[in-house]
Image 1: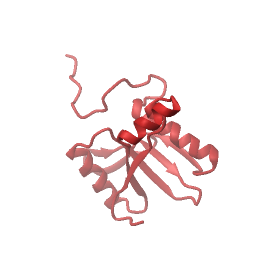
Image 2: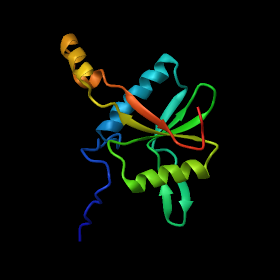
Image 3: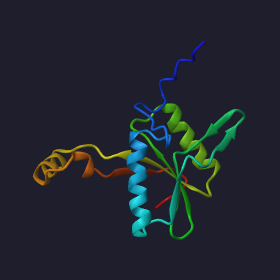
Image 4: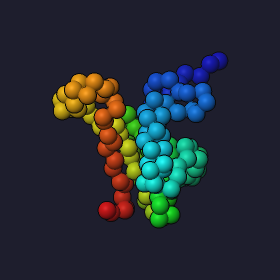
Length: 139
């Protein structure tokens, strides 16, 4: 019997080579630009799995090493479910030696639309990222 996919998995197509959905691919391109320009030391996709309780695991999308050696974990979300929110908050409190960030694509505003039209480029090329740092870290 074929198992029906759960409703909270990432929507859209997943690339067969990278295993990334569209949002993860866009964010990986952003991280690569940061790496090449010297903004970060490096990054990996889906490389670390955190044990939170018996049979409960959390696999963040990206492991990012900053230039000072700090390790951060970035989770990309098109939308946030209650379950995902609880997992990232719990993981951030259990593993406080790391920084956890929730990354969402910036909403399209009228200003972005106007700029894209004036520059004759796709709207997505001008959008940035809304990044939330999860407690207990303060910035």
